[in-house]
Image 1 (spheres, rainbow, N blue to C red):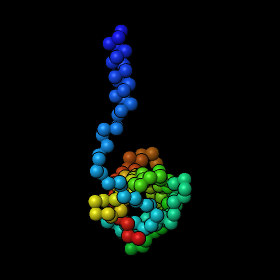
Image 2 (cartoon, one colour):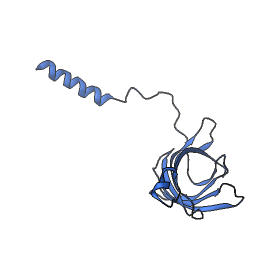
Image 3 (tube, rainbow, N blue to C red):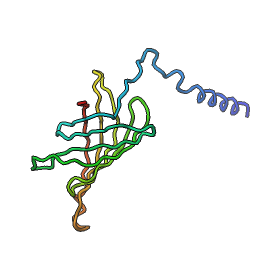
Image 4 (tube, rainbow, N blue to C red):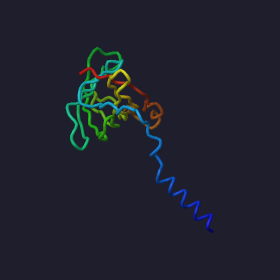
Length: 149
């Protein structure tokens, strides 16, 4: 019984200490990354976010050119982010000329050269006419947007 209590006490002590020895001693703090601004990916899609509220809510415009078109289409963008230096976020886009609805999740990060980027995973859903066409209606991918303003 005494050994069991001693082991329990040791476990409680170790759990209480967890994390105190694992912190790097000479690490630099993470650089701040802000969603506010204009971002572009390698496909020339552009995101413009005007501001982020104190609660993390933001809106903006997603500009994309549809396949086989020279026109740029704007889509409304609505999202929310967590607070912090390099926040995670999520947003939806809709309204691309009766096109797809999309959702993005990601994180605003700063690379070792100080460049800000949005690392994202996305889902796009196109409208289909029947349940039989559903099999190809959702696309999934990843993308990186780089700050241009």
